[in-house]
Length: 423
Figure (cartoon, rainbow, N blue to C red):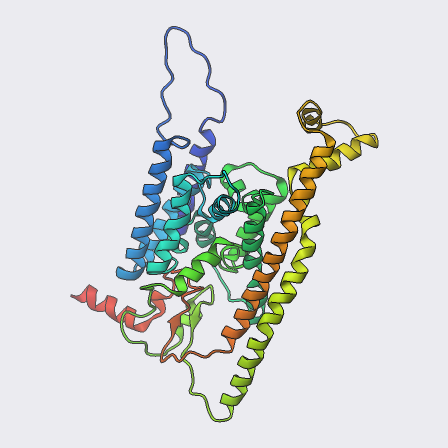
């Protein structure tokens, strides 16, 4: 029932968002002045800092609900609010998920600055993850909120499937940084499936991709968060080092394993068994092999990444323009872009020179991108060979999204709630 009410709230906000300046305002005579829209103040400095304030308050509330109150119900309603406000009202922008591209472009492109509000949207969730885990994913991110509200019957994927899909967000992160740093494209924003749904507009393939993710999300919890989102990689790195983190049980774990069955994102680590004399040498050999393989993967990735310059260049508008000019020479109809180019200051020679320089930058960046992928894969293999001793079930700090679904499964939590009700 509460999920239906939350979705109804989101639909109501969507209707307000559609009505917001959908048509030009008519001209009135007689001195009448149209009232200002009180629903949204976006697009102004006041609106931007209001959004930052709402983000900071929502993050603080999510941390309180997850770590102190341990309230799944509170997190649920905060999730519904975030979907309404950051999703439909603000139409998914400013978005923390895509903000890393602004930061990457500013770091590698002289003269490019990041607005302070965008920098706050980039940094605040990372800072909170470093302090309290992925509370941004828990109930603040509108992309995660949309998936959380539709996850009615989530099933866990086989371990081999999650390990294979694990690399996709790392690829998205590396590509996003590479393309933004070279000024080629903001590929994460361009292909974001949920912003198109929030705005009720966008390319049909993107809209269908978003609807498909929501349909999959009914049975596979948070598919975008776990297997696509590049910002989630940064959050997982911060959360791994978090000062405090959500715990499954309020006190001592009784090692019942019920929480592992309740977690829809498979982010709970079981208690470890003691190693025997027979298994210890085998584990050591696996670790040595992974360490030897690490530099080979980095070098191989750097070499292979050098071949990405030419295909990635096709994502830039100049490459599309050059292809269209060639097509028009073969008889294709002229476009607005080619007409503007012919009437502009650049010549074909300058266009080709700009493309050659951009391709050289993409080739150099491709080497770094490939080395990055080789490094993360190699470190993943090393981490899988290291066994940390655990006496009870614990959340995986990197993968846990702090949603609180595991609370109700813990008998110690239920015992605590009964004692609280009786008291």
